[in-house]
Amino acid sequence: MDTILEIKGLTKRFGGLTAVNNVSFGVREKEILSVIGPNGAGKSTLFKLIASFLTPTSGEVIYKGEKISGLAPHIAARKGVVRTFQETTIFKNMSVRDNVIVAHHLRSKASLLGFFLGTKAARRDEAEFGDSADEILSFLNLGGISSEIAKNLPHGHLRALGIAIGLATDPSVLLLDEPFAGMNHDETNKAIGMVRSLRERGLTVLLVEHDMPAVMKISDRIVVINFGEKIAEGTPAEIQKNERVIEAYLG
Image (cartoon, rainbow, N blue to C red; front, side, top):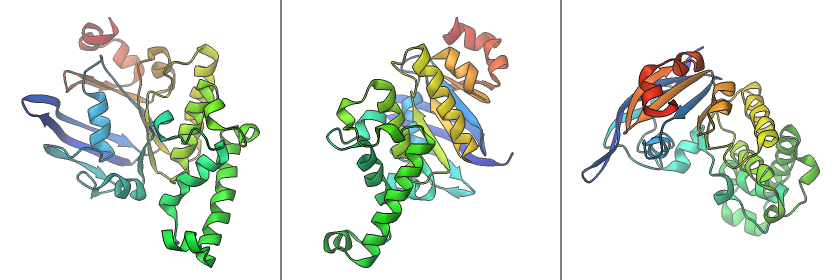
């Protein structure tokens, strides 16, 4: 598989604190790669750097041969690298379907004024976004709750809606921030199936997660971060046997 995303020597300092220190790894097209490590290890900062929500102190992120580090987050998202935020991106008083439709506007061809005036381009966008939202919800087995108000959804469905919102932006690389957090066993298994289906859709998935059984079950490869530095990279079987990882985290 070709490498779609390259993280090269990423470093981020906040004053005297080095949150991420010279981290490098590649992400292959259509793989599921997990980033794990103890609390405070720098995983969230690394994710923000990859998705351009933070500018690195040094190093760079290369997507399909193009440097995207330092771009505005919405520009990186338009290019295809999208980070999901689960509940924080959801309009709680809107329906599930309307949430997904709104998320499509990153792809709109009509202007904001065009939507206000109801131009032909805006009407065409609205029709396309509605059809796409229905397809995404059906794909994620959420069609039956499309008219539900988001604030009334159980935890597992809220997480799934966050993924649907991410898909609405038409990404190539989807960054999932703790997609299994707070789920029971059955919900986790359903979410694992959902994430696997993203790859079948042609996406590359990069996730941060603390649920180790889920990580070991779903990942093609794992990168381990500790105190801002990469201490290991490999398959789940290799990571489970790595002495540095056992000492720092798994043990």
